[in-house]
Structure formats: C-alpha cells, structure tokens
Image (cartoon, rainbow, N blue to C red; front, side, top):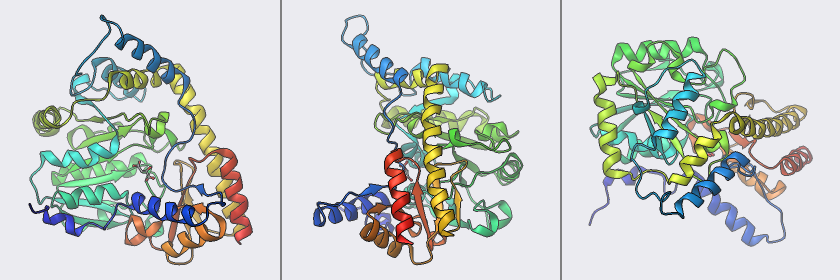
Length: 389
Ligand code: MLT
C-alpha cells in the first residue's frame, strides 16, 4: 500500500518531536545535568481548582445510573457551547450556540478544517509560523504561498505583502512564534481583503488571553464583517492550562457561504470526531465561570512575570527580542544559525528553546523561548543565560 505522496514533502519529523528526540539523547548522554525546558509551549502550573472540582463532580456523576453519559454530541455539549457564547458576549460579540464546535484542541481543527475544502487549494501562510499549518496543508496536497513576517513589518504581514490570490488565509494573533499581535485596524484590512477576494480566514486565537494592548482584539469577530469571511479556532490549553486535558473550540459563523461552511464542518465532525469527554467539557465550563477565569488569569500573570524575567536577562545582555508582552513567547535574535544556537544553549547552559528555523525560513537567526516554565526554573535559566554571555 502506498503512502500519500504529499508526505514526502514533509520534514522527516515534526518540529517539537525532533526537539524532544534531541533533548532525550542529550539527557541520556548527560544523566547528571539538570535541563530546563523553555521549548515547547506547554504549561506548568497545576490545573485551576474550579476545573479540578468540576472534573471530580462530573466523574462522580458518571459513576451513577442517572448521571452516566455515553457518546456525547459531536459538536459538544450545549452547556459548554452556551458558556462560550457568554464568554464572547463579554467581548461584545454575539454568537449562536450552533456556531460553536467543541474540539480536542486548536491544533486538530487547524489541520482538520481543510477536510471540507477541495484538495490542491491555495493557502496563504505567514513565515515564520506554527508548523502545524504548513504540515497540515502539505498533507492535504495544497499549494502554500508564504507571506514574510519580518522585523520590518513588525512580524505582522498585511495584504499588501501578498502576491496572488489564496483560498484560505492563516492568521495567528497573538502570534506563535513571534509574539506579535494585530491591532483592530490591521485586522480590519485583512477582513476587507478576504471579503473582496472571497478567501476564508482561519484565525488562530489560542493566545488571546495574553493580550494586554487595548488596541489588539481578542477575537477576529470584534472586527465588523469578519462573520462573512472567518472561522476562529481557540483553545483552553494556554488560557486555562488544559494541554493535558484536551479541549478547544472553533467558531463557524452561519454567514459563511450561506451556512454551507458550518453545515459541512458539522458533517465532517459527525463522521470523524466523537467529541470531547463529558468530564473535560464540564472542567472547561468551570474555567469560563468568573472564579475559573480569575484563577486562570492568575496563572497567566505568573507566566507574564516569567516573560519579564527572561526579557530582563536579554536586555542586560544587549540581545534584541520581540514578543513577551501580548504573548508567552519571546522571539530573540540569536546571532547565528538557530539550530547552532539550540546546540549551544543545550550543551553550555542546559536550556531547551526552539530554533527559529523550525518555524520557516524567516525564523533563521531567531530563537524562541517560552514563559510557560516554572518560576524557579525560569529565574535559573535567566541566570544561566547571563553567565553564557
Ligand atoms: C508551541 O510550542 O508552539 C505550542 O505549544 C505547540 C502546540 O500548541 O501544539
């Protein structure tokens, strides 16, 4: 049996799997060394109490005849979709519950959404970028047109940077890996462009809870017209520490092709997805209560302090960096090929980061550090960085 030939265009391993392999090899060869990971953007704070309580309560229900649930609705339980509609209402955005689809995380839907389009469409993707967009489009046999994200455009490419027409446009704000965030004004230009060209914006808002600047929207649907040209993919992972629980959501407005996109996505999900566990959806619902959001925001503040610790170390080393304000990612200039810097940091300071080249050609010469580490480890990593100078 032959493998889909598009797989031959993929890099041999997924970026974060490659890093994990290299780190595992280093640890095996250096068993006494304490390695600090500021690589993959995985959270480290314990799960917030309202979510834990909800998990326990829901698990208890599952052990009773009255409370037991089997397969849930493919689109997600109504209670969680209603809680998300309320969350968006708090941002001034009106949604219907059947426009919200519960997922097992943003990464899945960012690739899976392509299932509803023909193979071979053109995807416009920023460079550097979260590698799952690129790999997902390669697997689907799509044509990729890159738009350059560079210090010159603040890592926020605009339609004027684009040549040709695309069917789908991936935007991620706040951006992974650069930490840059689009303003309302900039997103309005993208919405206008998508409406004019008939393209669909696939908007990744996984880091929205980190936004601090008031002129940067938390959701694309704050921009007038976006309901006619965008889907939004988001996650409880970074917002409420659900990387190990798995829960996210996708908003598919009815306006898109007179509801055909929403209907096609529901049809796709019914065939290929059996929903997120009931207990996890109850935990997600709890994360959206006032107590849940307050607890989640406390963790976000904890990570923001980490970002400042890393930023201060880089400042005192005279290293130029971006991000870290509206995002948990710090995008630093590393002054050498980024995989070389990866090796230097791992071998000489036992710090794991992510080489910019792993995010695209424009990532070369940059390196990504995350603020998701433990506070003690982050301080120690900053001290090690300073010694490395
Ligand atoms: C990252 O490090 O870029 C992300 O944590 C990966 C992910 O969310 O899948």
